[in-house]
Structure formats: structure tokens, C-alpha cells
Length: 274
Image (cartoon, rainbow, N blue to C red; front, side):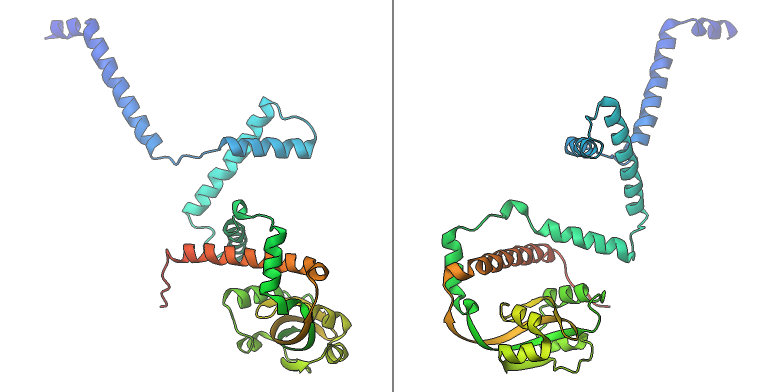
């Protein structure tokens, strides 16, 4: 028996077979370990961005060694972020959620669909909305009032009113109490100037009907404004209001694009209240 074992110990074929088994076992084990790992990809576009940013900030060309350092830092960040997502560190974190929501706003505005309007398109828009570019005799509007012009509620409230399509009457629940009325009907420029101030009147009489507008400074604070109705007379010529037409047109195109993108995303979800 001992003799047979000695013979086997010196047998080259057996050594080869055993080596093959060990190699197979090693690679089988390591392959399982690797397959259990998440792949962290740093794309060529990301490398180019790292390179460009470095050269912009440090005003010198990024050599191979510098790129290795930048990629190592990118890899470090991605590993930690991936782990943070896996253990749900962002869950219920208001700051992170707000940042993600801001980024999604940009995602929904697909830059590939952006194009400058032609003169013909602007003129068509002008004729379709001719009353928006006419002399305004009287105006009816609602406003959400904030006493402090640096109130942190202003922007979130504007977003809420726009996204939820809140009508002008229901929006009063978001307004601070004011000595001036929440809703005003059929008032002239002079009346608005007297009560709210010249700056407010100038801005107000240029706004489009039917949408919530950014806050305007008034005598007693700032107000988010919704134009309910206008009584107009003679339209201004296209050449007089072309800048306004351009601004209104672009804002409407962005609004349409965002709403379309949101509908597409929202179609994949269902609201459930518990």
C-alpha cells in the first residue's frame, strides 16, 4: 500500500490532474465572489468630464497620472453612493429628495427638443393670443400674499400651485392675512398703483391670464399672482411686443414639454392612499 502511494506521489499525470482541480476550484470560487459584486462603471464620457473640469479649474492639461487620481476619486464616490442607495440612506431625507426633484425637472426638459422659434411661429402665437398683447383697461386678479419678501415658503408655494393646477379661489388658504383683498375685480391701472404700488401695477398689467406667476413686490410684501380676467381694447403691434411674445412662447413650450414628460412618467404609477 505504501509502495503504491509513493508511486502515485511521483506520477506526473496525477500532479497535472490535481493542479487542474485546484485551478478549477479557485476560479469557480473567485467567479462566484466577483459575480456577487456590483459593477461600478465609470464611462468614457465621465472621464472626459473629469478631464475638462480639472483643466478648467487648474488651468493645466490632465496627464495620465492625474486622470488615474480623478478616476479613483470618482470610483470612491460611486461606491459610497451605491452603498448609500442600497441601505436607503436617502429615505425620508428632505434635502436629498429636494435635490433629486430638482434634477428630475431638468430631466423632463429634454434639451434635444428645444429649438428657437421662427418669426412665423412667433407671429402665429401673437395672433392666437392677441388679447394678451392689447391695451388693458381693467383687470381682475387673485394673489397669495407673504408679509416677508424673503419668506422661504414663496417658491415651494408657487410650485405647488402650478403643479396641482390650483384655481385662484382655492389658493387663498396659502396666503398670509392682508389688509388688501385676496381677490380684486375690474380695477384700473391707477387703482392698482394707488393700493399696491407702481412697480406692482407695471408688472401686473403685463402678465398672461390663467397661470400662476412668480412673486411681485408690492407696498406691503410680495404676492404670487393669478390673472382671472382682462378687459382689453386696441392690440399693440407685433413689433412693439415681440420680446413679450418670445418670452411667453418659450415659457409655454417648456410648460408643454414638462407636462408631457410628467404624464409619460406618471402613466407607470398608480396613486394609493392608505
